[in-house]
Amino acid sequence: MTDLKEKLLEELSDAVVDMDEEKAVEIANTFVENQFDAYEGIDKGLADGMKRAGQLYEEEEYYIPELLMCSDAMYAGLDVLRTHLKCDENEEKHKVVIGVVEGDTHDIGKNLVKIMMETEGFEVVDLGRDIPPRNFVEKAKEINADIICLSTLMTTTMCGMEEVIKILNEENIRDKFKVMVGGGPISNSFAERIGADAYTADASKAAKRAKELVSA
Image: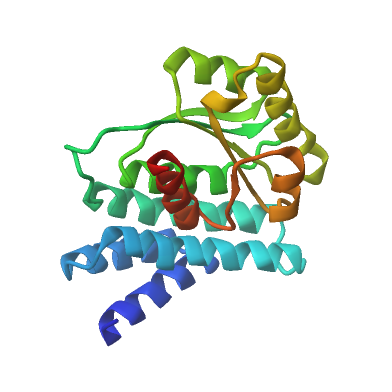
């Protein structure tokens, strides 16, 4: 990694943590002007900053207002970088249904996963946040999806993920869809316990794991 690229990635991350939208836009523009990979700018710059902001929130250094301003800075940089993402238009597009489970409205992580998956060539249907389990299943059936992605940041709503898999099993269609889960309180052991196909800790890993699932 060049010194300039590393410096700009650090500055993108810092702009998010510092809640500085103008700086995020400025650095994102500099990043693409130097012909650095936009995907890397999102993953190792903006997403890294949001991860750091999340840690500050957990340590009670930041609260909800600060976290929201951090996300505003991240999205400001994202608006610049996402127009420069490279996608293979000739590749077959597999379909993904994604959303935040019922009872939770935290969607920053979900939005990052969506962008990363689109970059990897997936066609992503975003249901949004606070989505009942049944809605995931019905939409997946409607569009003949390959993967259902479930997100939450709250321990109290994790049961919604298990409910989606329960519905798939009850309708004898579990083998038709891969189910991926993620979010702050989710772990690999939880994913295994509820019968999910995959868990990943961050957005870029989720997109790459999704490619592995459809390739298999």
